[in-house]
Amino acid sequence: MKADLPAALGGPVPGSTVLTLPPAPGTHVTVRGLAKAFGGAPLYSGFDLDLPRGRIVSIFGPNGCGKSTLMNMIAGLMAPDAGEILFDGKSLRDTRIGYVFQNYRDALFPWISARDNIAYPLRRSGMKAAAVQARVDELVALFEIRFDLARYPYELSGGQMQTVCIMRSLATRPEVLFLDEPFSALDFEMTLFIRAKLQEAQAAAGTTLVIVSHDLEDAVFLADRILLLTRRPTRIAEIVPFDLPRPRRPEAVADPEFVRVKAHTLAVFRREMSA
Ligand SMILES: Nc1ncnc2c1ncn2[C@@H]1O[C@H](COP(=O)(O)OP(=O)(O)OP(=O)(O)O)[C@@H](O)[C@H]1O
Ligand SMILES: [Mg+2]
Image 1 (cartoon, helix red, strand yellow):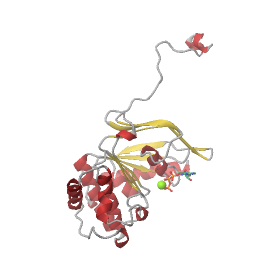
Image 2 (tube, helix red, strand yellow; image 1 turned 30 degrees about the vertical axis):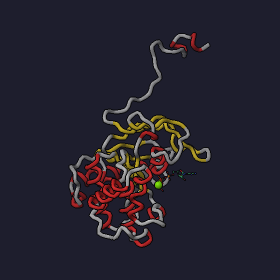
Image 3 (cartoon, protein in one colour; image 1 turned 90 degrees about the vertical axis):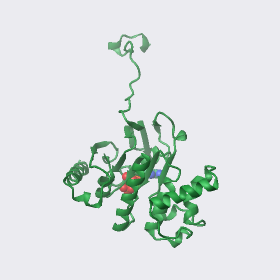
Image 4 (tube, helix red, strand yellow; image 1 turned 60 degrees about the horizontal axis):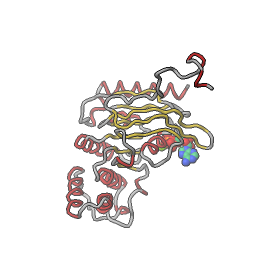
């Protein structure tokens, strides 16, 4: 009869409540007590995280540490074994999210044009044709699209396909946008372009952005916070703030603050690799 024991012997402490970590001020997404194991091997357990509203968080860590798994659990693409994920205290179902898949070549519908791919989530939401057209035109202007959107995905270059994927993900004005390795297959010119456009779109809409990257420069360049993960079983090694003013232009990579944050991030990463 544990409940009858005095507190010192393991009974309840008078007036105590279940201890849950309250979200930090300005938090949009709260992750508490997340657990996930594959084949009996724990990947995450008791994992807590706060994602700040309207900010860009990069997830960075060694291969196989669970970057994609973490993002997919938060985005509702993979069920956690335990834990709670809340968006402003609401569930995912009551939240508009966007997702850009790592493998953009397979992410677009091949049987409809690029324009119809971008319009697809708007049509599905029941939006009227004129409003759909207006929203797609807005995105075309924002992304300065000069290629023919009447073309089918297979007729586009890799960079063009990825641009279409990002436009589609932004179409419904998501509150939270998830991007898994959005730069991994882009050439340098395209990377600079997408970095600039993502910053513009994010600033215009105040979207909360979560980006997985395994390129250190990409991870740091866009981020307000770099979430550094350890090897599995995965914990947070450090959350590194990066407050360089926006918009960050390509030259920002030579800024002393960028160089400092990148060096620090690399040092934490290397420490974790040798731990
Ligand atoms: N569906 C699954 N079944 C079994 N194991 C899985 C599954 N998904 C992921 N894993 C394992 O969980 C770990 C984390 O995988 P995850 O893809 O999240 O890592 P990551 O950090 O994104 O890796 P990468 O840098 O290679 O993209 C890996 O060891 C992986 O093998
Ligand atoms: Mg991954």
